[in-house]
Image (cartoon, rainbow, N blue to C red):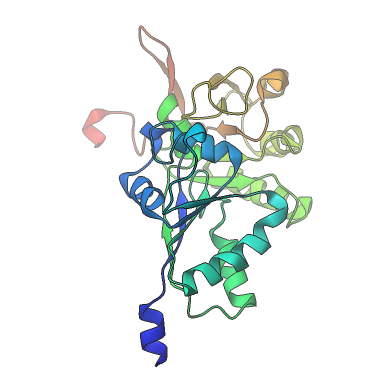
Length: 276
């Protein structure tokens, strides 16, 4: 059998971003891929989200005979990637579930690194995008990302603090709205760097479990708090766990309030309608 014929018998490895995870925050493409995959690799939390609308069968119903669900954990990522390559070679479609978007501190890079490590150039890989926390949080807040923005992870697992600080400082000087991920790691230190380059009165929002309602890891459910750069560290109790992110505005970001609540707006240009 030729290599071309062998490849024709392969399945596909999908890295699927499920956004916040709840049904209303998933793309139709993500739902379709997870529903029809022969094997779904997902953490317990993501499995719970996917069962809410039948994307996966209810836990008490057992697995479908034509679909296997494999529990994903941090310590098994490499093992599961290798297993996924073999399943695809055996003709299975595998959905490897990532929260948010796979390309925003998700799982897509690991899959490609493992494919390189294992010389798995024959395995078809497709990335299915999802709504990341920056976008979900921004939607809750109004229009804070309508101008240039960037995301910066505070995790020092793969890079040292000196590199993180350099990025924070460059983003602040360049006038980007900044969204911080992994805020349980030294977020006060990051705020200190940003304050050296940006005024204390710029609006800041602390966001927990964007788009997840009361279904996420934060004990208080989905929350967002609007404060200022100079005061954000006074709200340490409101910075939850892994689902927390912090959005730092610029001198153009304004607090806009209607009869319901406060919003954040960063205009893309001037503040007059005629400028659009």
